[in-house]
Length: 75
Image (spheres, rainbow, N blue to C red):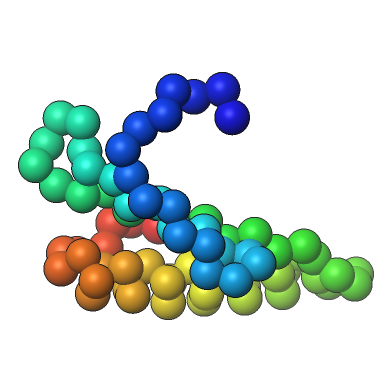
């Protein structure tokens, strides 16, 4: 995507969740990036999609936190 390659692991957790875990380039720690993608549907779809995506994002971030053994970063 235009960025240089870096060491890390990319996990796809279903069609709408992606987690990238990589070592920090400047500190002795792991960094985890969690992405949730959802398309809104219907007239009130955007608000509902945001609410559902936020809940899923928080659940996945909590799971990553437990796997990596450290506090989850800010969402």
